[in-house]
Length: 238
Image 1: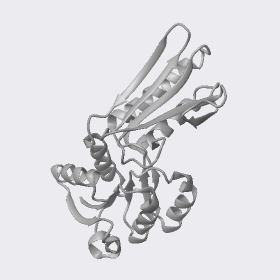
Image 2: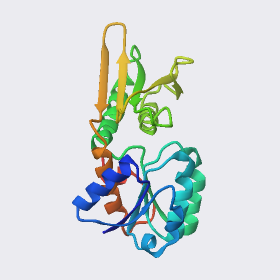
Image 3: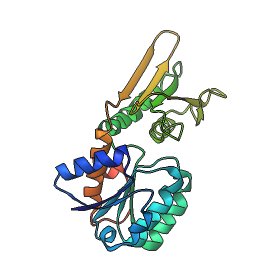
Image 4: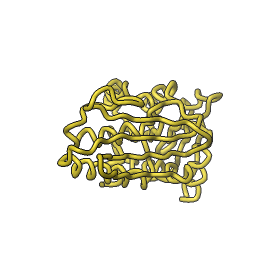
């Protein structure tokens, strides 16, 4: 298939490598200095575009894909408070958007385990729960999009927690997410349940960015011929 890349930083280069290894053709590479090329025939010829950029430009990039008639796989986080208006534009343009806070197969398994564990722990009120996420110093959003998705999985299944908060609990019903930015860490997410007598902890520790990149390419393969808003639940079926 033909793939367009939007964003050509570290993730863009890894996605290009994996896409070529899987036999795909890269027909357009869009970066900060050539965004107008999303109006060109080469870009419009793509079967799917993969977007990994920054929150400030992600929505404009998604809209450009809608206008070009190219399904877009977006891995940029930090903008999803505007998802309702993006979805409305997608429906208006009969477009396709595949969005996830994390494309790693391992992370999506971890998310499923997280939900199941929260269901179990709902019956044991003596345990409090908190989360810590660690990422590289270049990451702009905190908490990470993955941490927020994990928090939502807990809130949906643990009655005693009603909202997530940054860093500390304001009240007992809060789920605290602590964010650490250091070095070049691809991503570590830890969920810890603690009582007076013991603790239960699950962690996902990404060793590199290739797991995220592979998942994004799998998503690009998946969106061909599909319309509407899609996510990793559609792709992985966990």
